[in-house]
Amino acid sequence: MRIYRISETWQDKRTLYSDKTGYIKGFRDDDERWHIMEFVIFPEYRGKGLARELAKHIPWKSVLYVSPLVQHGETSPKQILNSGQLMDFYQSLGFESTEEDVHVMVRG
Image 1 (cartoon, rainbow, N blue to C red):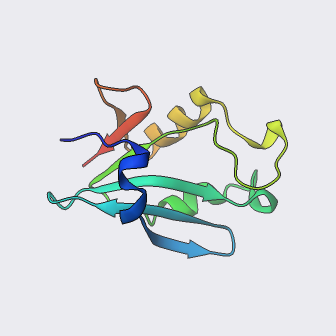
Image 2: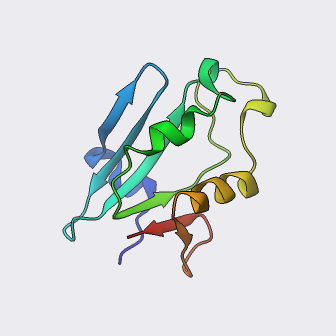
């Protein structure tokens, strides 16, 4: 499995799912595995348990690139989960960290 840099794939990224609460963007590789580059809950919907609902739209066979320091829009630091919280959340969805990079998680 190839691990991509976000800058490599920016041109190929597309929206997998979007609604009023947030969106998921990524691309599919030649092995039919989805690479999720952005998983965003809009600030006004954070802290309401909606991330788990939105995550149902992530395809099972996926690679997730976790970047806890990227902030979209104007948010307070309390609204951004720290790296440990993000990893725990994604692990609860069935993702596991890769050996190559702790901020890359794989499922399926």
